Image (tube, rainbow, N blue to C red):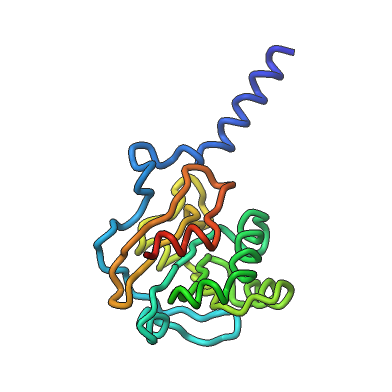
Length: 182
């Protein structure tokens, strides 16, 4: 019984590994720093449309780049995007263009967007090049998933805020993104 309990504890700690991966950066989160210029983006969305960072902020908007693990298999990501879509008008009124970025293929993103009526761009970062450029690849995983979090960029492409939780289950909701963008 003791051996079984120890195995259970070791397994739980392994699962929580990514939840404590930020170490001393708990407040700031991983990746590029606030004040830095956001790395370029040139990715396809769920509808096959190509997007660049200039396209996303084209109307002098702030851009919330919401990096997430997967729209295919990760329930916390799915719930976050349904919540964001439910408040999309509120976000747009605040001058924020929401954009999701994951390592999922365009086909996976298209299915998810149709099923959940997602209207904002979900960008397919197959190969995780943008995820790597922002410095948020989860190194404990081999498949290229990012640490989930949000970079808010000004219209000039500068990072004005970062939203990251230490754990992977809690996600930022619309009101938190709006508040951070002020």
